[in-house]
Length: 88
Image: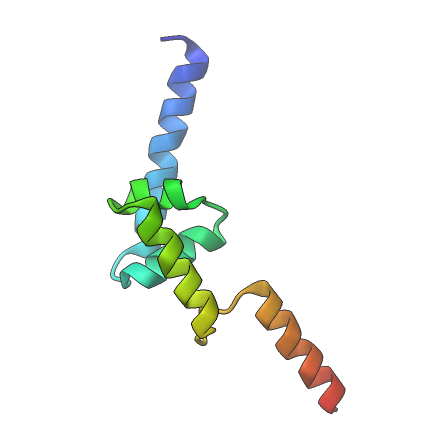
């Protein structure tokens, strides 16, 4: 194993530990949204949470469709801000 692979492996472990800390005591949907918001892909999220990429993708789809407070996408937030600006 060369030095680059060693560093990459250690960074992988650190990312997972940080992700787990951010998600402690949260529901699976909240965990998925937090990790997705941090820029992780469904496959990476699934590996961290011990589930499948399909489960993650479905959860993200449901969260986007529901548009629940706290799980809003950037587009939803921009639309809300735009509506507020036009109302004043």
